[in-house]
Image 1 (cartoon, rainbow, N blue to C red):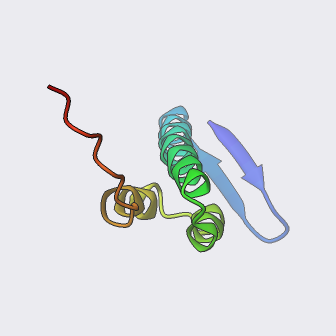
Image 2 (cartoon, helix red, strand yellow; image 1 turned 180 degrees about the horizontal axis):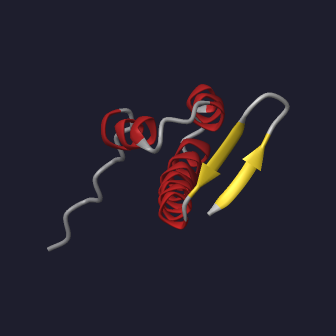
Length: 79
């Protein structure tokens, strides 16, 4: 158990809770990194700033990647 004390409160975390927090941080970083990379490559500055500042545990990033991507031109068909 880990004890964290503040000015007026005390918090105790178990190793299981710390593992869940670490897993959530990794999940968030993976999605945030990929979404920020795509927003930067697509010159979508507003999306880049919003994705950078808002933390939603990857939900906003997934919505952005699925619904708000610029459509890429299809490659010409080869024969």
